[in-house]
Every structure is written in C-alpha cells, then in structure tokens.
Amino acid sequence: MVELIVVVVIMAFVAAIGIPTYHLTIKPTAHLNGAARQLYSDIQLARLRAVSRNVRCGMAFNAGPGYILFVDDNANLLYDYTDDGDPTNDEEVIKTVNLANEYLAVKFDTAHGGGDGIDFANSTFSFSARGLPDPDGDLYLKNEKGEGRRIVVNIMGGVSLEKY
Image (cartoon, rainbow, N blue to C red):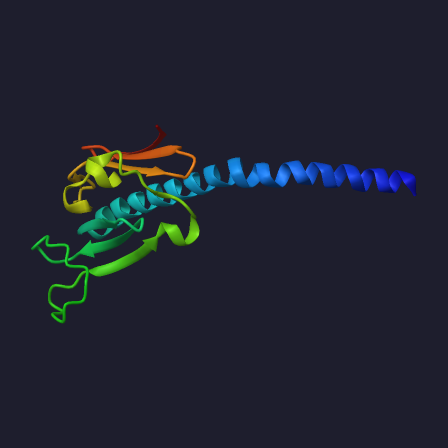
C-alpha cells in the first residue's frame, strides 16, 4: 500500500511540473508550426490548381489571420471572390480559412511585411496557369512567445517555410 501511495505521489509531482510546461512552451510552438504548415500546403494547393486546371488561382489574406483560396476563371484578374450580385464576375472559392479558429494566439507578424505581416501588394497574389506567382512575396506568422515562421513564395513559384 505504501508503494502505491509513493507511485501516485510521484506521478502527481511529474504532472504538476509537466502540464504547465506543456501549455507555456510546447503548445504555442505546436500551434505556430501547424498554422504555418497549413498555410504552406494551401499555397501549394493554389499552385497545383492553377496548373492542373490551366487557370489563374489566387489567395487573398486578411488580418484574422485568414485567407481565401479561389480560382480566377475570368480574364479581368480583379479577384472578385465575394458575391456582389453579379454572377458573371464571381470567382470559385476553393477554401476559406481562419487560422485563429484552430491555432490559438497565432497572428500575422505586424513587425514584418509592410506592417501587416503580408508582403504581397493588396494582400493578394495569384499563380498563373504555368505556376508562376504574381507577385512573389513573403508571409510572416508569430505566436505569443515571439517565435516566428516565414513562408516565402519566390519568383519561380517555389514555396519555402523557415524560422525567423
């Protein structure tokens, strides 16, 4: 009986140290990595859709942090992904994502990317049917610990994910 009590006390002690450590150090980094990987994979999805369907495919970002992935089927390149009542210029929305819903305390890093963490003109970019971005640029994500991840879309359409 004494051995059982000693084991329970040791387990409680380890849990008392481990649980706060997890919430303060491991969980914010895991959320940042998850959000960065999701954004990275959705950029790759936009490029894949553009090439496979032979259309322009774009992404529009908001401070949420979030984004809309859409197909620009018409030739005007206006990125009209909202429903304005005119069905002739609406774009096909592939995916709408709000990273804050799933990855708590992950935000665009306003210290980079022109003050909003998004280094694309008008917070929008697209891939041509050849998989080339217009324009190229960077996205910066950070968590409450100040850790950051940068997603780079280079001029040739390559996408990379790195710490900063």
